[in-house]
Image 1 (tube, rainbow, N blue to C red):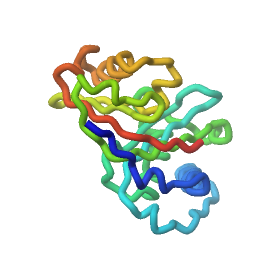
Image 2 (cartoon, rainbow, N blue to C red):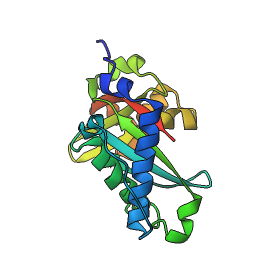
Image 3 (cartoon, rainbow, N blue to C red):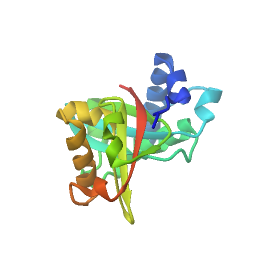
Length: 186
C-alpha cells in the first residue's frame, strides 16, 4: 500500500499560513467585538479542506476544534473553527476578551484521509501523519504534531487516538483507521 502525498497541502506556502492566521485572528476580533478587517481571500482558500484550530494560552491548551472532513472552503472553515476553538471546546471554559492578547493560534490544514489497516502502521510517519479512528458512533482524531509533542511511538499514537475516541486502547484492531497529512501554521 502506497501513501499518497497531498498536492493541496504541498501548495500551501508560509505566506498562505500568515494569511490563514490573519483570517483566524480577525474572526476572533469580530467575535469579541473588536475592530477587524478580513484580508482578501485568494482562490485557493475557496477549496474545501479539513482544518483544526488550536488555541493555547501560555503554552497551555485552551481549545482545539476542527473539521476532519473537507466540507467547507478553507477560509470559511478557519473563521468558524477559530471561534469554536476559543468558545466551544467542552474541555475548557471559553476564552474571554481579557485573555485575547495572551492566546496563541495554531492552524492545522488537513490533507485527504487515507484508509490503512492496523497491519500497515509502519506507513505512519510520526509528525507528518495524523490518525482518525472510527467504529460505529465512536471516533477520535489526533493531529500529526501530537505524536511529537508527547513523544509517542506509532503504537502509542494509535492507542491514544483510540482512547480519545472513548474506546479501548486496542480499538484499532477492529476499527477503521485513517491517516492524513497536516500542514501546521503558528
